[in-house]
Figure (tube, protein in one colour):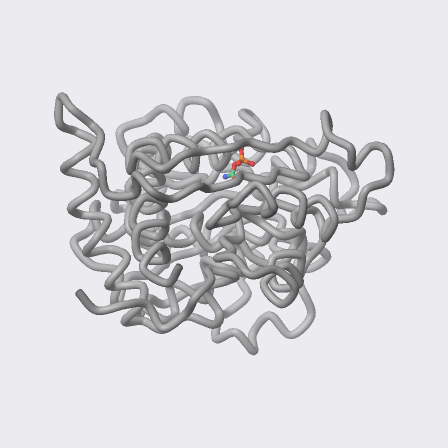
Length: 307
Ligand code: CP
C-alpha cells in the first residue's frame, strides 16, 4: 500500500490531495468494519497511543479512543484538568514522561495554535493534531469532507458555505484547506467582525448575507460562536446574531432546492441552528460523528506505518 507524504498529521494545509484520497479509501474499508457484528481488527496490537487533551472535548476524544480500540491498539488517556499540569509541569515534560512509558503515537488537543507542531519538533513520536487553538482541526475537516463525499457522491465542484464564527474556528480553516484541495467551491458567511483578515487569500469568497449564501450552496456547514475564545464582543447580542445568521426552517423553505446541513458540534440549538433543522432529514450531523471513527482509524492506521 502507498503511504502518506507526512509522518505526522499536524494540519490539512501541509498534506496533499493524494493523502486525503488515500485516507478516504482506507476509511471506506474501516467503515465496513465498524458496521460488522465484530467491530474490531487486530491490526495495531503492538502499538500504544496516548490521547492528551489539554482542552475540553466530547466527540473528538471519544472518537479517537474508539478508533484506537477498534484497531486493537493499547490506549492511555490524559486530561489536563486532573493532571500535574495543574502543579506547573510543562507540555514537554508532560509528554516526555508519557513517552518514557513507551508510547508510539500522541493525539493532542491544546488551546495554543502550533502546539502539535511544537511537539513534533521536540518529541520522537508520531503526532496527530486533535485541535490546536484557532489553528487547525484536521481530522474534523477530513470527516466533514468524507461525509459530503458520502452524501453527494463527490466533493469536487460542490458549493460549500461555512457559516458563523470563522475568526476563532480551527474547523473552518481546516475545512477550507481540505475542500479546496478536493476541488470544492467554498464561501464563508458571517458578520465581518468574525472574519479573519485576508481570509480570501485561502481561495474563498466572503458573503455576509445568509440567504444569498444558502441560495448559492449545496452544503451549509454551521459553526457555533466560540465564546471561550472571544475576549471582546463581536456583535451586539446573541439574539441579533441568531436573527441574521441562525439557520431556520423558514429560510430553507424559501429555497427552491434541498441543501445538506452540517455541524461539527457541539451545537448551540436555537442560536446558529434550530433544533428542527439539526434533527431534520437534510442534516448529516450524526453521520459526521459516525464517519469520524472510520476517518480516525484510517489516519492512525496510515501513520502507524511511519513508526
Ligand atoms: N467537533 C469537535 O471537535 O467536538 P469536541 O470539541 O466535542 O471534540
